[in-house]
Image (cartoon, rainbow, N blue to C red; front, side, top):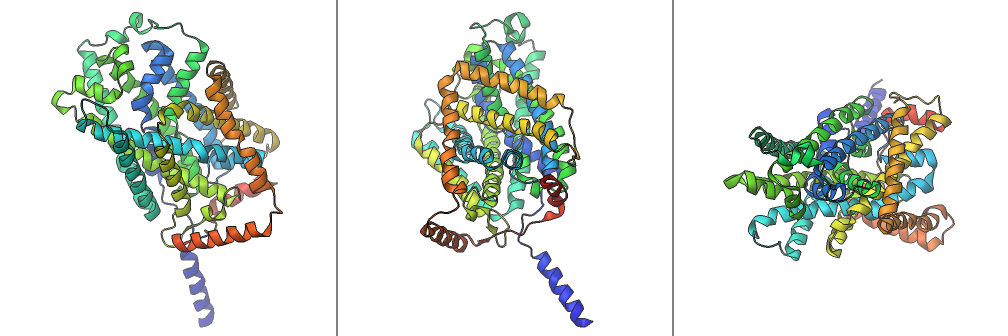
Length: 497
């Protein structure tokens, strides 16, 4: 009897020491991840691009509201997918499960190669520019200084994410509150201006005076610019396996966060136009700083600090979620297996975090990244559309699959109609930009067939991979995680049927 008790005690001890991703993301942290990833540098960069392509203040505000509405439709679809296929990895995991390895790999390839490293680089550069701007009031900060500070920020937050999931989520919680307070300050000051009668640019007769004839192509590009500011609305789906009670908290966090961000973005843009004419906004290199200089007087220093805090939290959020995408891809065999390993004690995916960090630093070293926003937005929208089309395909192919959430079919259909129109207009207006985005994605086809599909590789390649993996394990102190099937098993088992 004593031996049995002892054996049972040992088994319990082993189960407590499981090396697995920890479920430490509650509802508050889940909302913070969505809001913190959406509100990064976009709201301080995109207003200029949206206004430039929209051609008028009124139409630009409509683009901001509709952009939030489209995100809401998409997020409802992702809520269904997230609880039906409760795996970390977001779009990649869903598309791989529904359409197979090649389509999933192409999304993974474009995301790891260009989409997330470029977005991280843009946010990091925005952070360094706003931090350094007060020291260089009459000129732009030096090229090397901005790159160096951006790199230091990325390296520091990578270290934090490698050290502890709890530290990373706490930083996300704190800086999400900070960035919301910064935007609330802009909104309150803007409302005060409206009450004082300073709203000439918002009067309908003036707001819809077009600086250029509106076209579907230009409106599509305005939506692409706004989509960069809204990007990140699906990032909670990348860490589903670390969410406490994902079937409840995942959709609830989406329902809370998306409307809140849409309201904040729209009111922030209204506030900008209470202090700046459209011409002034288009000539400003730092919209929030210009806003602060015009309305906050001696407290104008608050704006660059607020933007720095906002972007700092954005970098943390993107590192946290994009590293889980690498982790998921490696677990499926689409990336080196080393990236699917986690630290033995901290339970953090250190190799995946390091890959994200290195890719971002390389892009920072290459040069200017702001021109890549349209590439990133196009690839983003392409992946969203493919994923939501997968929801419709899954409904038809597996109608009896357990779905804790089931959205009305009009939701994905409406999203896909808008998606198709946007991509068509984008291709018509900017064929070079969109074609390059497609080329970046399609370069993954030969990589997939050589690296993944080709199973009978020469023996020396496998030996080399094993040695590199073993060396990486020793350097990073990582092992393969044990799967926790408590949340995933019931649904994925049915999906296989």
